[in-house]
Length: 290
Image 1: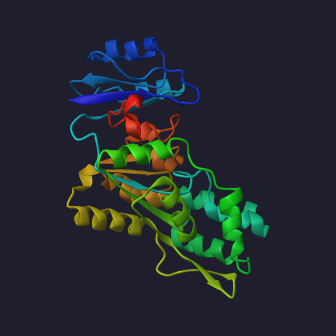
Image 2 (image 1 turned 30 degrees about the vertical axis):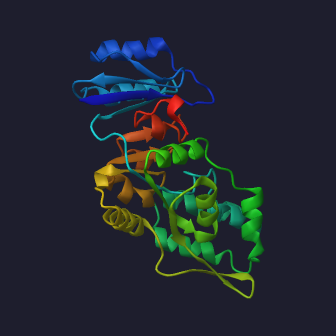
Image 3 (image 1 turned 60 degrees about the vertical axis):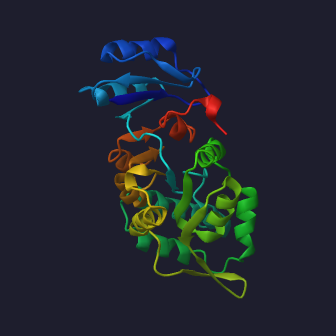
């Protein structure tokens, strides 16, 4: 059995009954179950439709995300999440660079690294070097004035934890930010790189070894082993090339507003919904959100 989930932007709930019924009739699915009026609905299917991606592309043009997955084990017992442009709406290093007056240059490097065009470790080292001499206090300034959470994150964490899930934040960014985000949203643990500081100023060097793609996979392996669960019990979410390792290994790998090269490698692509989409695709109705 498979489940097809249709969802859209909760800020502009435009999912119509006509669209849902058209898909149900075309694919011979069961009766549609509405998870949230105008936002999300799901349909039970006997098999995976051959024209899945053609229909997906047509619905994208209507502002609708379509996810088709096996019904069994949809509800996960662990969340493994990226931070920058996933749990928060910014890239922290870009914000620090903007304060340092090298924002445009660093944003260009970040975009290429996240799309897999540059080696992650080298790109991070180059960008951090441009921050040399910034006062350590700028970190808190960026947190206070520039960091905003991705919509739906609080509901995602609260609902999954209420239902017994373990939540880990694993970032190629920095602990100075993951600590704040983890505390604010309720993550059980967080892992990231360390911005080195000396005499109250950034040294322009990250701690070694750099936490990148391999380290995210290592986190997946280590945490599931510690919890005594399978990788199939994990939902991973991210947007950049350094997330692909964990996204392709986890039972459900979600490309959230991801770079094109990343989305192309993932079966679950959220381009219109927010982080509550990760609850809808697990079968949670909005009435069940914590």
